[in-house]
Image (cartoon, rainbow, N blue to C red; front, side, top):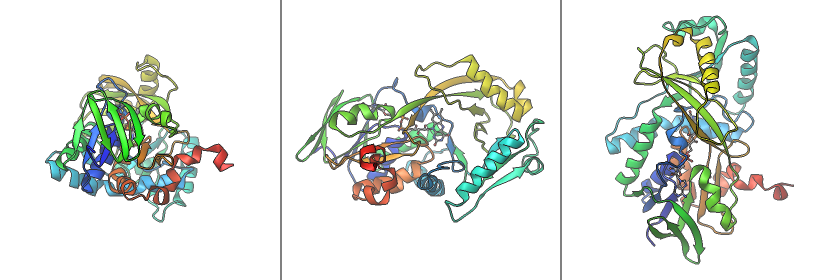
Length: 369
Ligand SMILES: Cc1cc2nc3c(=O)[nH]c(=O)nc-3n(C[C@H](O)[C@H](O)[C@H](O)COP(=O)(O)OP(=O)(O)OC[C@H]3O[C@@H](n4cnc5c(N)ncnc54)[C@H](O)[C@@H]3O)c2cc1C
């Protein structure tokens, strides 16, 4: 055996799980793919977000909230170990409403999720209160208010990824980049993982390869259904700090740039379009008209890792115990629970009890019927 655990995929989900396993004293090897791979971890918006998550799925809402609550301690421990700064803050977050209808829809959605948690920290704020909370922002005339949740925050996702990868090494694990896994073969004593640069063996394998996960697990009968969803984002030049709260679709980063996003598109190519840039810029300037004079410096697209119902999948193969898969949207938000809750549950055989709501069995129509 080369390790106690092999993690396939070293982006934000695989790295958080590997970090969690290494912190439990496990010998961990992470096999990551190529620079050109789809990597949502390098293309995302950087929200550590609770409101609106799992509005029809209480377990997912609660998991997102648990992760957001664990985030400050998780990041402190990670960054103290490696001596690296990661820009993160949790001032609460806004979802802006540009009409009475949007305001009412959001209010109704909040009422539903209030029932999922003991603590009610999401509320509607009207325009007057919004102006009081953000005096330096000149809101457009259409802004009627926002939904504000104290639990929301934001992070620099590129720094987070780098910190997690360093954290794995600091905890004794190995990160092997440009080492694409070709196959996983179950055997009597564990698994043989064939990769571009070598063959590795371990009693446990966690597949967290984003959208490439099904291609590795399906051939051995471990079905992980996923679809991709393209999202495009814009970023402006650096501006003086003026936006103290991150918002869904609009946030100012610690270095002053304003991120505007993200579209939801059923498209498979990696390009960007003028149409999406226009849609994003129009909504942003309806919220904050002054943004019309900011220079855009970059536009990019990324692909969301989407399970069919939008909730995470944490699963262990019934046919090959010790083989796990983890796939989700919101891997930034969930990084803290991945390290602190999901990784130990995998190691201790508690996935099917503690995190049963997230099993891939929920997509098995015959079993459910
Ligand atoms: C536009 C957009 C905005 C988003 N905004 C947010 C947000 O604000 N907050 C939030 O929480 N989440 C957000 N997300 C979601 C978040 O980025 C993803 O949930 C997360 O990146 C998924 O991480 P992952 O590690 O599963 O997959 P990815 O980041 O896609 O990485 C997959 C990894 O697997 C590796 N790999 C693939 N195949 C193999 C193989 N055969 N062998 C070895 N390695 C392999 C790749 O090299 C890569 O490193 C957003 C996503 C997008 C696209």
